[in-house]
Image (cartoon, rainbow, N blue to C red; front, side, top):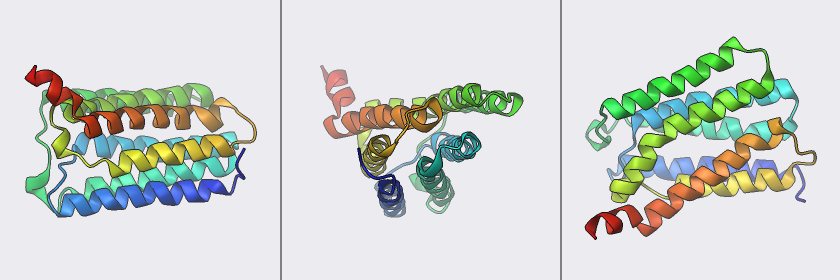
Length: 195
């Protein structure tokens, strides 16, 4: 088990991954899906608030680092408007579903239900980027996803008492970010489509 202070390292790593993505957006190497990045930023920041309410300690720093980085990426996407991934009805439907998850959070006093609603909201926001990483992996950068997966693993290794509030979101982030890393790195979707 790592020292809880390693959460600082994980948070810095997550923020560095997002900074790398911002650089790639500014260089027009990456095309962010605004729906995903906006909803990730909102949902992940709200998870941090929920974690503070549950008294999970330093683990909430990762949520805030990721949330602020995601909102920064959303904001920077307007600087290079022609580098943004095209949005369609599917993307907006996922954004609406993500918003509904956040509404459930606002309507409940149960911290566990709120956490589940956050994970569902984050999952709905992730669907467009998973689809994009499958069909057009060249439009993505691997750095933020690899950094978030690593950061989440660091948080999981430093949690002293495993509670749903302390580990559920970090487990989700680890799994989904590893999926994105594999899709982008292997270009499996493009290779499968060619066959």
